[in-house]
Length: 96
Image 1 (spheres, rainbow, N blue to C red):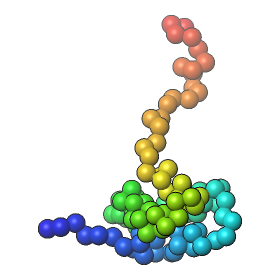
Image 2: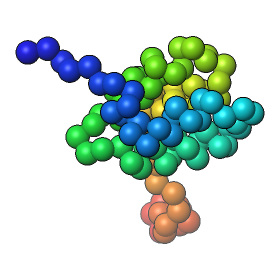
Image 3: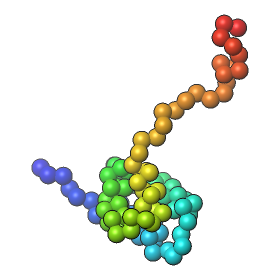
Image 4: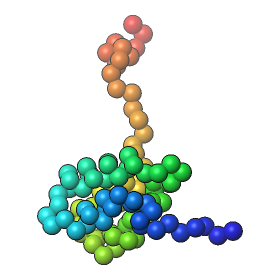
């Protein structure tokens, strides 16, 4: 059985990405905020990375220099490995 191809309206039911691409003069920060809103509303069972690829194909290919294209592309990269920050071990020298 073949893989079902997702449509842009399935991965962006609120139309957030569609709207972001038509806003004149939208900033990087505004795009990041819209992306976060979109990411928090991704339907259960939907692979966010696959959804981002669908959005990049639908909107990003026609607007490679748009700030949302950069935000979506960054959304495909793996986050840095979490590091321990703070706590007693960070303040006290080894062996004490």
